[in-house]
Structures are given as C-alpha cells and as structure tokens.
Length: 139
Image 1 (cartoon, rainbow, N blue to C red):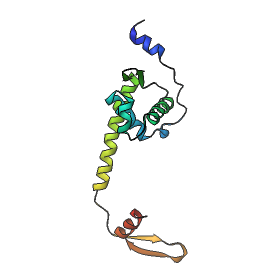
Image 2 (cartoon, helix red, strand yellow; image 1 turned 135 degrees about the horizontal axis):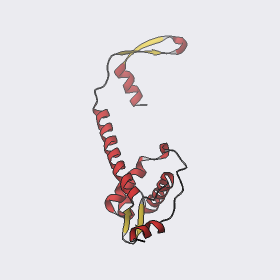
Image 3 (cartoon, helix red, strand yellow; image 1 turned 180 degrees about the horizontal axis):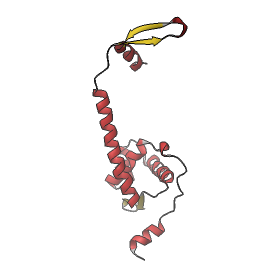
Image 4 (tube, rainbow, N blue to C red; image 1 turned 90 degrees about the vertical axis):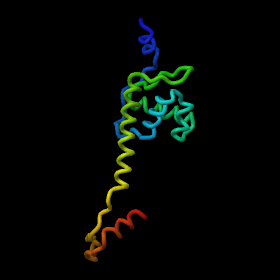
C-alpha cells in the first residue's frame, strides 16, 4: 500500500451529508480558503475573526455537512485533501464573485420616479421612489 493510500485509510470516516447545501455558511467557506492558504488553523482563525476552538468546530461541522474530510491534521499544520482542494478553490471563486456582486449592487444607479403604494382601505397614495427607498434603507 502506498503512503497516500495509508493516509486515506487512516483518516476518520465522515458520514454522508445529512443537511442540504442551504445550510452552508460563507464564514465556514472563508475559513476553508484561509486554512488552505495558510496551512494552519492557528493562522487562519484570526483572518476569519474567530478563536482557534471556534474555527476547529466550524471546520468539523462543515466536513460533517459535506460528508468529506477537507484537511489532513498533522503536527506541521493542515494539508488539504483532494476534496479540500476542490472546496477551497471553488469557495475562493465563489467569494470573489460575491464580493464583486456586492460592489456592483452598491454602485448600481438608483431607480427614480413615482410608485403607487396600496394603503389598504385608505386607498392608494403616490410617493417618489427615491423617498421610499430612503425610508426602507433607514428602517
């Protein structure tokens, strides 16, 4: 048996995913990226504004949700598994796209004009769209 096969055989088995993908959170994906980049939970956790204990727990929960082991835990730090490389690379791409989405949304032109609000039995009233958007943003 090769060294790589021994490593795979010695890794703790994780059960199949028991939750849907909607239960994945962005902070855990950011943590995977940081762990892959730094090779250390101790160095990655401050980058995600969490303690090492919290980061370790989040990583374990994410592995349980995905049903795969993402990192080999070694004395020298974390080494991504094949699944870990896939999740880290895809997460990095996803996070870049999300950051770009937020930047684009913030810089998008604001709509203007009039809208009609339904006020129930009191009838309709006309308000300017920009004043309505301001009230929604301050709520």
